[in-house]
Image (cartoon, rainbow, N blue to C red; front, side, top):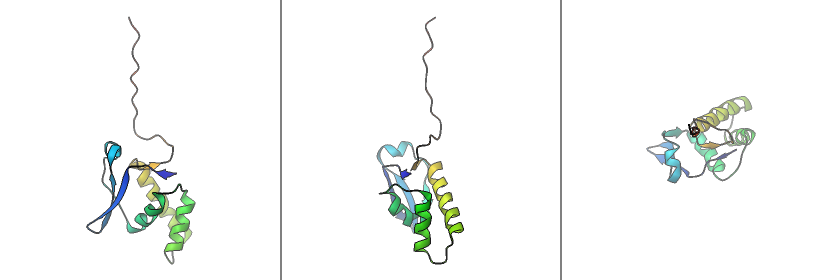
Amino acid sequence: MKLKDDLVLRKVADQYVIVPVGKRVQEVTSIVYISSSAAYLWDFMKDNEFEVDDLVKMIMEHYDGVNEEVARKDVESYIKLLADNYILDDGKMRGFNFIRVPSGEK
């Protein structure tokens, strides 16, 4: 998996916000706020392909006392948030695609 391009993370009033830029503005229409833990992962994710296991390992190494079950649950929720908001490039189609097929001549 990887993050889509044309997305930046900004800290605004002590909150982290994912901001679309360029062509991504039309696709990512929601304001997405993330936690400081998610922002920590974002720094890695923006430049690398990753799997859930990679992110779980990072959380467990960065935060003392977090077990694998809690880390995995949190990472999976984060990945779902990104996917639901068209931020994650995981090869899955989301949303609606309309194709207009011309009708035959009568």
